[in-house]
Length: 440
Image 1: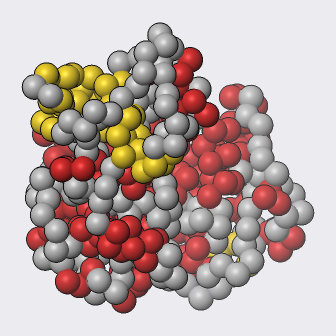
Image 2 (image 1 turned 30 degrees about the vertical axis):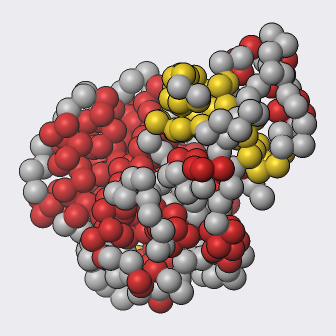
């Protein structure tokens, strides 16, 4: 039995209160189980208990065996001296705190059916362990939990964005440029695009915002895709030659170091997703006077925002996928689906974090509202949820489902999930009916 299961029982009073007694047989009345703690220290802070007419306030520690109190070194740790109750599945040893005082220990008694349901759930072969039973839950209950998870996912991305923000000297334009550029790799070329953004600062691109050709030369040149011999059929290509000439001037001016052209992947990609096409589209997107991030912050509705990211590669690429080799002519536009990927993964998280940084609830709410207006994503994870009977109406919910699957289902954190906790306890009386996860 894991301690997490005992935490779950304690948090929601899913134990037999009549059998929670002290060493003298006095009933322990729990007025407040305390605040659940996931960091170091006791498992629950600020609990309130009544024992033999006396009120106690302090912390609660939990173990499967009471001897684990000593095994974990708590008997020598002063931070456990304020433990007023040690709750265990089996009391196999008398324990003392660092002051030499005995720690009141009591065994917890519960319905074994709860543990059976829990073990059945975490041992289910499905990635989504609750797949067989999730359909029995009220849809409003599920949607309420998903709404919480969306914010949790955005906050998780906030840490990554704020790290980049710090690395760039608190420059939002530079930060957004790095975040956005990463997603132009569409998984296959994510790392090369990240390396490119680090090698070519946005402050340099910004100086050429009014000249798309120069931005394109900076991107292609720094990416290493203008190396002679990389595209053998381009030796007599005027556009290619002009771009090499332009980059030589710019690289000398800014002392740029180019990447190796071999790091870019073309194999098994649709030609429209070749890094050459994506770089030209990125150049078009960055050719914005005043900065791209400033422009998206000014957008008031999803159509206006989406239009910023539906960009066409330069005219040369109408009949090319690589330098020097002609193909059937058509405009290479990012398209609605690619624009949604940028919005979901880079734009909206950046707006949300910016709102948090500025302490603006209005900006944060605007970011979330944008997510609600984007069509649901289509991928293998969402298909798994559809098989389980859960259908998402927008990217707001698909993002929540992706987060739920990757951070809870895959790690079998069913006790931390409101859905899992509800299914385990189904049919029993809860102390807190409307809150079914361990976080307070």
